[in-house]
Length: 117
Picture 1 (cartoon, rainbow, N blue to C red):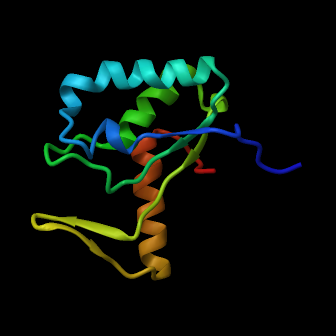
Picture 2 (picture 1 turned 90 degrees about the vertical axis):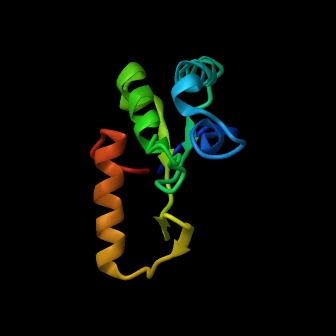
């Protein structure tokens, strides 16, 4: 039947990257929000490696903590790449096969899983 995800998903960008958030101060609340989503039947979590806070707090690592808490089978994980984070902000990077592999391998490590949906 293929991949099945909830009709609604949880976009996790604001948990580490946008809206002037302090990820260290909000990590527990973010994990609680993910738990609440799971309890409501939401299985799709949307992330990206470039949703990394200037302090280095990684959105994918946060999702990895939720996976560790609830189990990989509770989630359908989507993540993105295509931007490099630099001191001056994100810049596009090439979609070469080498970059695709590198980004996927790095995302898998941060997420603490062996596959991305």
